Length: 158
Image (tube, rainbow, N blue to C red):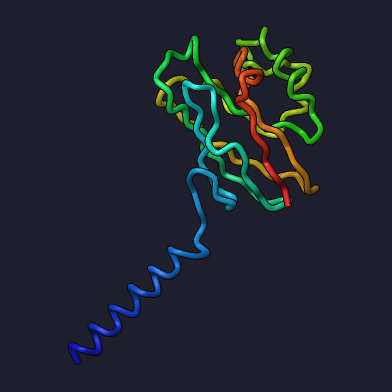
């Protein structure tokens, strides 16, 4: 009876290990599941810079500022824009809108989802519905100078 219990326990552990190794949802640093973590740092970089979601799915995205510099000089937000949005024009228009989390009010219709501007060690969770059409949708940090410095990425909708 003890060997049967031991064998059953080992089989259960093997099954769990197999599930964790292939097919379970990835929730950090760039998995293709519909829940993920993206970070922004003091080098004005997102990690990862691209992710894939299923068209029309509910997406949970956790955005973390992993930098150490003060929010006033190195705050980060994450704004996912409509397909075809002019990223440079969006970022330029955002510069004068600190009071609106660096999103120009007249361009809010181009935003699918956005976080507030985060300081060091802060995070925010966004939950939104992915667009129903497939394609590439840009995301940016619209804090002044960050988009032009390369703090951009792509949400791929399949």
